[in-house]
Image (tube, rainbow, N blue to C red):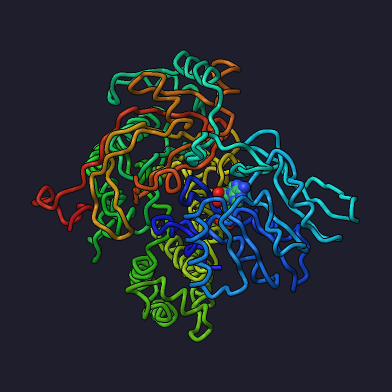
Length: 636
Ligand code: SAH
């Protein structure tokens, strides 16, 4: 079903989310899952005459039209009825008949119906609808004493006067307004505005804001903030995950730098691993460790979104790390690693360069095997599509064989240089996972998301293993990767992330820190591959965690969630609320749909760091790089 056809154009990109979305007149198009549930509950066999109340966009009517012989649908808003009728006829649904009117009275001209479905919630089951049901027919309707909260029930007509009722699920629909439904909210019958996410009691929120204010540790300045209390809470954690609520906010980077410096200097952390590609991070790594590798043929972090790592904030940290490492023995130098897997071709080049040096024969084999992927370099996603059609060979066996070849040579290769072997293995692993990533991308976001986070987690584990049982690592990645996915909507979609995998593997020895902001500016693009812009961040939405933190009235603070200072704070913050996530794309026009999700903050993070007003990162300017050594990782 082309659900985008039933939506306002601006929301087209959300068409395949399993979520209700706003349509005109303050109404909603139902969640696909609910449409399926209700349709199934009607028990249609095919060939029936069905009545639907609440046409809305016409989407559910179209679904029904695929099964039933005729669908009669009634909508209270003339504008919606006309539009739905247009959409349905445009899509060729000749068996759907739309009427503008009060559906609580049914559509008696075509009665009786085999099945009736009501897509809005009424105070009770309208008598008119029961009367228009055939004996043996089913009526599915949300009913509830509250205008916005109902029980989905199924009424089956057993005989002329006998109706049986079953409860199916708790649901939330817009109100059924009409003679046998709710009264219009306002006498002039102007539609109510789109139902906002249900507000909690204002008083409870005020108390919660009070407890945040009491519990938080405000600070003046990132450079001087006393991090001792935080370090005490981190204790001897093995992995510290530092999040960010956007990919372009200066304060998040600077605070992550500050915390990382403390962890490195005072707690002996041995590496920083970022949400960036392995081979790109390796270039920075060579620089910070004063390693003598020849400059490579490509520019590090040159792919979209370049500002995510090529910015002044990261550059400052990298320069600090290089200085810090200067005074250390080479083996004790802190390393800079990449966890991500978008560098398929640079990773191939790295494996080949390595093999050319250590084993030219195997290098020839590798060239043949990796050659399978060469035609797709300009756009690896097309490889995935081509492989799916079955008309092109997949390269899976070849890239996996290459990984196994390398693995089998561990003894021989790693003896010369364990460090370089690790690098080659990681790249070969990346190629194997990226090959799979591009193929499964077309099966939907869940599988590819999990593959990617699984890869990042495995890379992290390989690093910890490489550095030995006492090693400790720092991760820099978005909140959506480092916060435990179990506490967010992600888990309903079957997705997991590094934060979750770390909790499973390391328990309390994984410490995850989330970041948040209310407003300010952010570096982001409007579309994938679009230019970076400095955009204004819209003030956070009421009923979000961000709104609570904003009302606490401090410009910046640390808030312990692992050891919350009061039971009220814990209870208040564990009730799921909206949380904002900005990625490399920012769409303020569709902020609620694009950037907010439901989460339970206390289960997601061990600590939350707040910056009320934030600023965009400063991307590196080419002229600033003039005169730097060839090995400088951000060179052009
Ligand atoms: N089936 C729709 C869901 C629409 S939401 C879809 O798939 O898009 C419910 C719709 O019921 C709203 O459009 C609302 O205007 C309509 N509605 C509410 N009370 C009604 C009534 N008494 N008669 C007809 N439609 C009604």
